[in-house]
Length: 183
Image 1 (cartoon, one colour):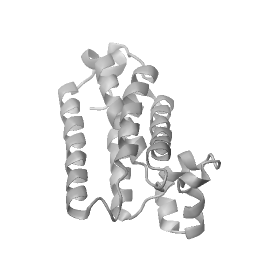
Image 2 (cartoon, one colour):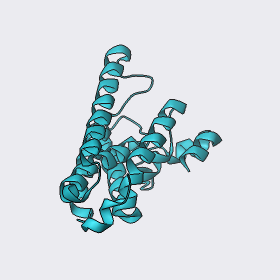
Image 3 (cartoon, one colour):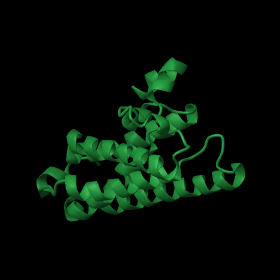
Image 4 (cartoon, one colour):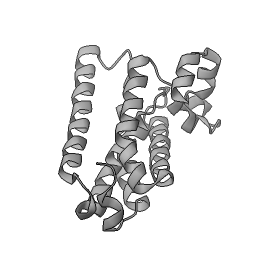
């Protein structure tokens, strides 16, 4: 859906889906902004991270649980933007991606002894997180965090929400169901 909407590149559609704080009474915008992306790099990064992070989680926790964590990250990103940066419009799935990324910690904590490649997973998660922090810092220094403007507040809100909701939503699984999945 995100790729299709990007390919449509319809200004009217973008205006109706983007999170714009002055239209906060249009409640769908708190979620629909995740379908929009500023450019091909933004879209590609979000899609790749959704696949990289989400596939293992969906196999081990189920589609519904991961969807709840993802959507909670998206909503918390728009709420953080609304209250912390009320002049800023928002697009992209990054808050949901951060929610999924940080929800790996509760998943690892709750199922550490049952998961295969647990140290590799933890290492990959740290590398992904640090890579994005370094990219965002570089972008802020080199470009003054403009073109595109990265909403760090939405990222942080999504990450915090993902960490908390991961503990609330994810299950502790039995040894046999976790040992042979997602290698």
